[in-house]
Image (cartoon, rainbow, N blue to C red):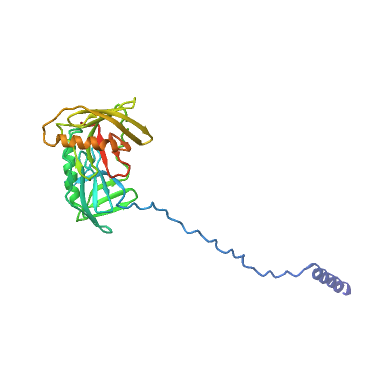
Amino acid sequence: MYGLIATALILMLCISGCTSPVPTVTPTSPPTTPPTAQPTPMTTQAAPQTLTGVTWYLVAFDSGGGSLSVKPGTQITAFFDTQGKVSGSAGCNQYTASYESTLNGLSIGAPATTKMSCSDPAGIMNQETLYLTTIQGSSGYSISGNTLTVQDSGGKAILTYSTVPPYQMTPAPFTGTMWYLNSFVDVQGNFWTPGQAYPISLQFADDGKVSGNSGCNSYSGTYTVSGNSISMSGFAVTLMYCGEPGVMDLESTYLAVLPSMKVYKISGNELTLSDGTGKITMIYDTTK
């Protein structure tokens, strides 16, 4: 009897000694990481062009509800000055017109042009007439990057220009090319253009000689160039007389202006001479 009680007590002590209390674990919240600040995306936008002071090259224009591209081998331009005049090449002839502009509005008057007639490429004169007619329908404009879009009164795009010429032509060689006068402006600001019957030409040779025809007579002289600077002098002229009205006046004015040219520039098949200030300019091309 006493042996059973003793054995039970020994077992109870053993169980009590082998059992450890289970510690209570208090759950903890995971550490909070502060949100990383996200950078604000920056937008880049091409600096907007202004209407004035930029040579705009026509890319396409509207014709009877369809869009026409400028003919290869022709170049139509528009330059808006800050005095309310727009001028440029209509493809064959030079033109100038008055204009008024507001923030998005644009009104262009009837252009005055030179009176040349070009035959190459085919359709160039029809294209010119269409352009000069279309430009008078201008009512608004918008500029996006290097593109100028001119709209009519209904908001329809009628002319699309770019600061980049649509057809980059290989420049004609300075020497050896027969340059034909398109038009020039004299010191008084008078606008001159030769008739087809009496073309005016200019040619530079590699040996420093310059020659051509001044409408009635042939002429020759010498020239030097440095970079885009040019100097011409020592002209000799034949002594023929042409009775066509205006021919001799044009010739004498041309020969008086030519030696004052100081700067030249070639763009495609076009040669421009100027006095260095932009007041007197002479424009030639390779088409007779």
